[in-house]
Length: 297
Image (tube, rainbow, N blue to C red; front, top):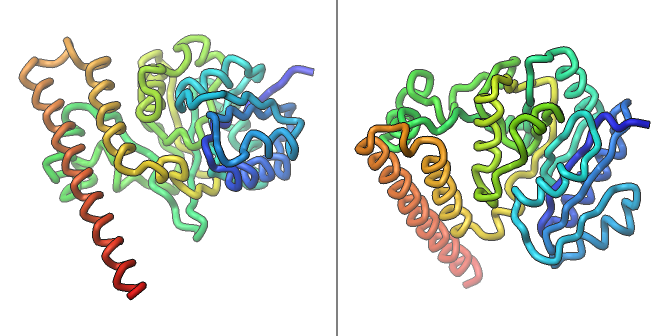
């Protein structure tokens, strides 16, 4: 029996969330044949043992070291046999119609190379999950603050005014849930492992659209997303890595294409933005520690 859908999950130290994610998949499976591939990046919380014991029907790839999100996904994709491939975060849960709805949309829209889902916080609020590509204009509007003042006209990167209630062609939905055709993977290749944690999905979506495919946000496809469980464990380093990855994205896709002065301006904006975010996070952390100290006294 041929497999229609391969669900690929890369995990690092999120055992309880991963358990809930897998339970939701097997509780609400698609009607078509499917497989689940879990890549565990050397978790220390017993994640791999939990999968092996409680979900023996899943394919488990237990790495002996943390190989990163991109390589973990590539391991799963290379193992996958499905006609469609779903990248799914371990801190998510699917609803009864999630997987069937996603497959139906891709089958009905042959021009669609990939789709993203509407993501809901546990309290039911819609999570912002769509962005534009970080083009020079989008980046500079964002760093200058003009994107916040004029989100509809100049907010093309963070997409703060994006309508999450209708189907739309987009640049980059969060890879928290990103379902793509095998034909897309065969055409554009695997994730670029030069982006181990951040911007690998942005780079992948960029290459998908450059190859002529469309990417859609489909609000009828919904998931619960607990949000950033792995990256919260390493907050400051995650901020630094995200900006290093954005700079690497610029080197890959814009160096040599932009005027050298504009390229330098963009890289400077990326570095300044990263520095400011780190300082803000440190200040916020100091305030939280002060509040905890006062509460204990």
